[in-house]
Length: 231
Ligand SMILES: Nc1ncnc2c1ncn2[C@@H]1O[C@H](COP(=O)(O)OP(=O)(O)OP(=O)(O)O)[C@@H](O)[C@H]1O
Image (cartoon, rainbow, N blue to C red; front, side):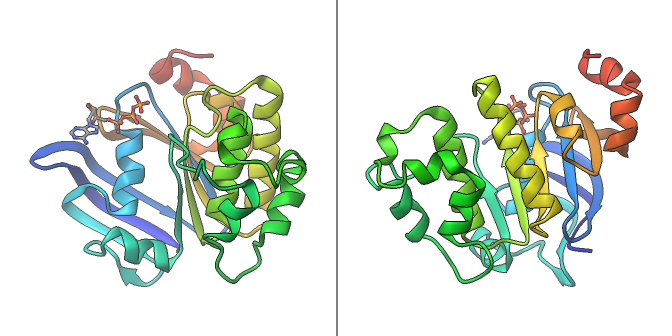
């Protein structure tokens, strides 16, 4: 297993947000995290990144107990993060954004440009001149050139035009299927990411209320209707 959460309770200070979360992810596997607003999806990603307070349980990365590792150590160990607010350097060009953080490994700036031709065309443009879709692609690219083993994405499709959503979905599918990188994607639009993930969980009030193979959930949407109110 690449990642395992064992009966994790976590939150901010004394407030408990997540309760009894157990899950595991093999190398190269992708997991969809679904649920309504405020159920704790982002908090789950932050808990894996070491940005919340672990109140009970364990977080294992590879063979190591990472429960007490600070965020920097988790990043060095191979946990990558594409934050919802994207966080690119606006004063640097696209290429500089990538080269500023790249670490040795299969994912180079050139490979990112092959994945996102739109970014390749704009490689010398400044970060401040990019569209929302290009910013998202760059945020994903920047996480990739750090050559993580696990990539965490928080609502990567939010606010993007439909044509860009399709490009980002295709790229993420390539990353997981061919790139050998495991992924956890938080998303409101369940349908879209069930196609590119292996497993799915649905959260409600900080607990996992349903887990399934993504293909099964796509074929029988009863749980989606029940917990998310979508068909
Ligand atoms: N820094 C924080 N300190 C205290 N409470 C927080 C903090 N961040 C989030 N919360 C609370 O944790 C709960 C879960 O929030 P979280 O952002 O994880 O939900 P979410 O499922 O990702 O929702 P959304 O889709 O709106 O982002 C909410 O009640 C929220 O108010």
